[in-house]
Each structure stands twice: as C-alpha cells, then as structure tokens.
Length: 251
Image (cartoon, rainbow, N blue to C red; front, side, top):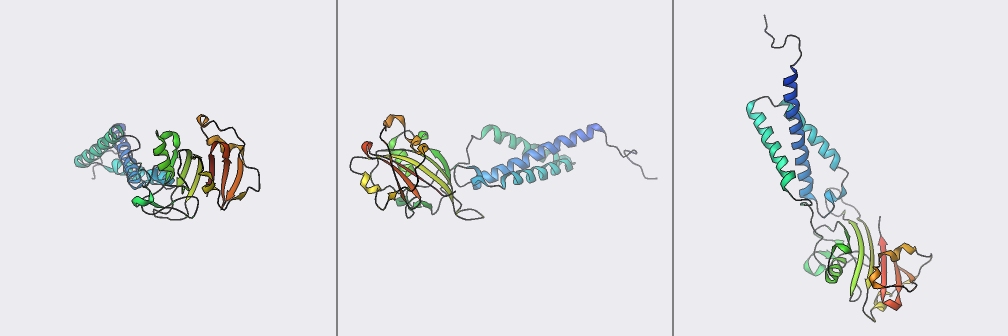
C-alpha cells in the first residue's frame, strides 16, 4: 500500500506559509531585476524613456520570480532565493535615487547632437530625452549651454529660462519621430534681436498670454510682446528689454 505523507491531500499551514514567504522573496527579486534592466537601458533622464512596457515587464518578472520562489524546495534552492532577495533589498537601500539617469549629450562640436533646420536639435548618438527646467541649473552659462542642445542659438545670449520636455524616439527597439516641447525665454545683448527675426511673419492668431510666464520676474519685462512665427515656432518679441520668448512643440 502506498504511503501518503498527507492522506487528506491538505498541506500544513506552516508549510504553505514558508513557501508563500519564498514566493514573495522571489517576486521581489524578479521585479527588482526588471527595474535594474530598464534602468541600465534608459538613454536619458526619463526612466525607460517613458516606455509602456515597463509595468508589464515588472509584472511578468515578478510573477516568474514568485513562481520560482514557490517551487524552491531544496536547501540549495532556498539559499539561492534568500541570497538574491537579500541583494535586492540591499540594492533598494544602498543605491542612490536616479542612478539610471544620464544627462543629454554634449553640444554638436563635441560629437553630441546635430542642429535641426530651425527649432530643435535632433539626436545623433546619445539620447536627448529629458525633462528639465532652467531653475535646476545654477549659472547663466550652464543654462545657455543646456538650451543650445535643443535650440539653435542665432546670436550670443546673456541668460535663458526654459522648460524642455523631450522624448527622443530615435533610439531603442521601436524608433520613430521624437515628441518634444521647447519653451524658452532668451535675454539677448543689445543689437542681437535682429538675428532672430529673419524669415518671420506676424502671427495669424493672438498668442496665449501664458507664453510670457516663462520669463523670470527679475528680468522685469513689462512691454507688450509682438508675436511672430517661423516654420511652426512662435516668437514673442519684447524689443524694449531685448527679450525673446520661443515656443515650439511636436507632440
């Protein structure tokens, strides 16, 4: 007669609790490995370039890890699950936030990006993906240098204020046109404004007053802006203060 360890077919609650615990550890390890993988391939400072596949990937790896943990019965297998789980916990405790973030590439003369025909610099090499506001950069030189990666500067610029949202879709598994928005205020030296007004024409519709909100109060811009357009971009000209607002997007 065959001997059954549990004649009733039921498993002791303690055994199920242990296997459930190892299942949980395996799920955490699987999801952590997925997170690390996406972080490694992130090209800019938006995690996984905003990919819709992140959540399904983490869920699938979590379920796979949980299944492996639940099935771990031998001493060696459970030691492996425990060790990888401990390493996963150490990762979350020790690794700094935004470890995966990479800055946008250097300027075109350093081999980073190439200026587009007018509005935005397109990537050639490292990804341009970013979500950055100018108040995150402490000096005018840093702000101007950063903006020059995305907007062809037609003259010297004293200072800038900007809000850039750029999703570079030219890299990765599925490539396509990039989605971006460049909203910037430029403080120009005297006599430089004319360089920005070439090939422009008056706006067909009255622009949104919201565009001037990019300008810092410290610039003390009070004159009424003149609206111009060029190749889909909008320019608000405050000639009295030598200040220009630039806005263009491709969402």
